[in-house]
Length: 431
Image (spheres, one colour):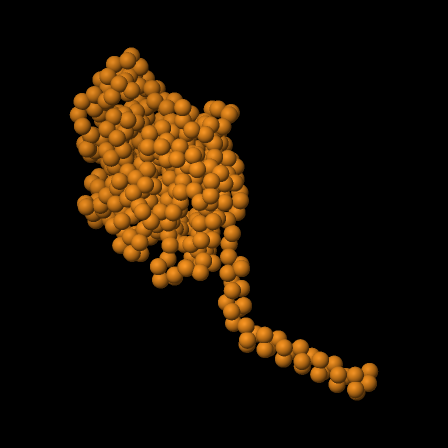
């Protein structure tokens, strides 16, 4: 190679280096835009196409790619947890787990009092009768349960007895206890509403530490994620009909993660939109699900807001937190306004929910740009929200959108319609 050719190559490399240096110095705007091009885009997953597009449009319009984005006034989104962010109800699954594992820390005297706390006396509504069609009263079923619990407390080695859990679960007293306690929960909610029923079930954590509740919730989550989704019935034994009579009650087993919601939460955050959960379950129970990396939602603990009980000397009391809203119905709006609006100076741009307990936060906050209704084909106020979303299908800039799922599998389906448990055909709205 000649000296002349070598010099020519050196000058060529120098010129190229100089050009690249000039570009890097003279193009700071390009350098600033590059990270924006790498922002997370919502995965299409099993979203209904129109619903997906509305959510992605919201992210584009209000996220960091938007010219109007102001990091000093960050937008934020609020999700319900049970049956919205996951399939089924983590608190109810934990209640069943508590029953099946006798995971209680109350004396018989404490238990007898706690199961009556806040519940009006007298018979429950006509939907909650015993197997002979007779009315069931609070006094009668509470007396039966107190007797069952006393027996189990004195027998089970996890309490004051010496017998294993399997031995105790083989007794008629356990079968009676299991059916009647779950029946009582259903009867309280069905007769007196969630404002009484939702706090009531939390009182059964009495005398536990927060760490004990966390461990119990994680064990329940893991067990329920591995269960089949199916209806299970419990019937109390005739030999222990007691005052309430023979009781039959059913519940649905199994929890499922919803990967589309986990992805949406992470996409929101990637695009500069903060994410919160406002739940009618105990705050500490939901935090386990929403924060542990193995479940994939990855929320900070402080971004989970739910029901709260008083804690004294490190132990949970069967008393609701003073001057704090019941986080259901209008209480969800209240806590958003008192906690989040106070923090940000403005309301959320997005609400996701599935039930009548979410309707108020869907409709009472003027800041909300888009409401996602996870379609459970229900009536009542959530049915009204679903109907509104259905009427806006196919239209530009909808305010309400629907997302369907298959309740037999617990998975979303790419449709606004839902396949109900035990059914094969998808349904858009309740009859």
